[in-house]
Length: 602
Image 1 (tube, rainbow, N blue to C red):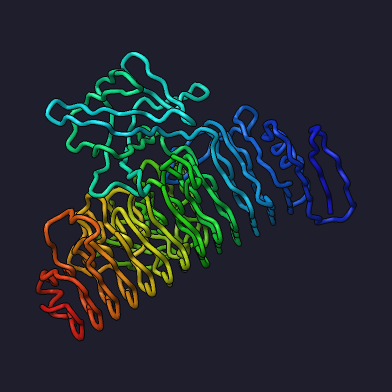
Image 2 (image 1 turned 90 degrees about the horizontal axis):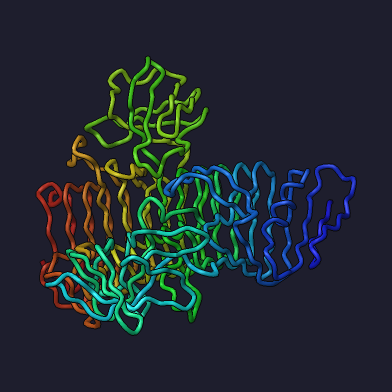
């Protein structure tokens, strides 16, 4: 076993044994100066395939100046050159023991990248930024008729500048967002997204400096922010997802324990083509007592074409500007049928550019319009990467003779089982969970509070091309409270594939979903909306209508079914006064069983 130690003086002390296949152990003692180059050099000097880094407990500073710079393809983020603090590639095992340390980053940095590694274990680390790459301000006054609103930007701990009737941020190391871009309204009393507020896209024509630290934004908007809210902006679309805190790509057996992410310049945890993942006893949320409202600027956790078992357990997830978790595969479009064994396929969304859809040995489903269901299966013989958008795939067997341009492929091999339990997800934009995998899904013992739907099943061939019609789902013993409190006409449970017009919307898509023994406390009406489902059981749940928040939309049916089969709503208890219980089309009504429900009178 090899040992390294980085001392306060910055020197490396090496105690090296002659054992083969040893684990190289690097001990990093605390120091107050930038630690980036020393961590980088220590990793780059490792000669074994197994590495262990142990940090003395302390607060460590990471600056981008001497960080590794490399071009990175990062799905659902902006590709390009990133400044990387921890880069691990090709290791058989990687262990990092933080011992409760805090890693404070500065500017545009990608904290962790793992690629082609096995047996990863990272524990006891808190990640934050000295200055977040966001803009926050209190809304003081709104004049919709004249098209302006007054803000008082937060200054202490933030960075921005006013010049030529324009505000840009974060004004760090020469980088600025020149649009506020995606902007969301938060309630300073609860730190949740503001009740009934809309998401905004701010790009004012001009900004006028007033007195007492107040600025007037001149911009005609469809919706204006509520007076008293905190608006939080993350910048323009193509720049505001720089990198996740943890990018894990083509790895296996990953365990992130006691990791807390207070801020990230993209997602908190991103996994691509990774097998067997556990995130436990940590979370993604802003620091307690802080006046920051944004933790990660995108999803807290995201899983793209993973396999094996995913477990998220005992985690707190708050403040992100997108979903708590998104689990999905990837659809690619057939651009050209080359011959009886070969096709050229296209990645559709610009933030999927460079993503590896398949590799030799993978099994692939053919999905042929107008049927959205999985069809024939074939095994990949080889893949030729043409560029970041197109790849040529050759199959071992003959492809369907009816396959044509515009049909889609889905990777069968890379789909995971997914379990989330004992977690709390709240105080953020979008959905708590977006789930798209055909294997086993278990959601149990969690607390959910949502800006949009709490749980969504939404495979789609429209924008992101995220695949994963579900086939085996259990959602049980969860507590849903104050859900859908943004200005969204959505239900708590939302099952609605987003298929483009070339697909038949009457054919069922998702299957076998059980929602049982849950508590739903809601100010709104809508509980379940389901489209194109075959096999939905909603049973033994308690629904309590509350009066602690104002209804946002007019009365809506609690249950709505369209083009569904084999739906059972039974044994549920409703406490409330909504008389609009059920809306269904003829196709769904034929197969619907609505029975033994207390307080739900049709």
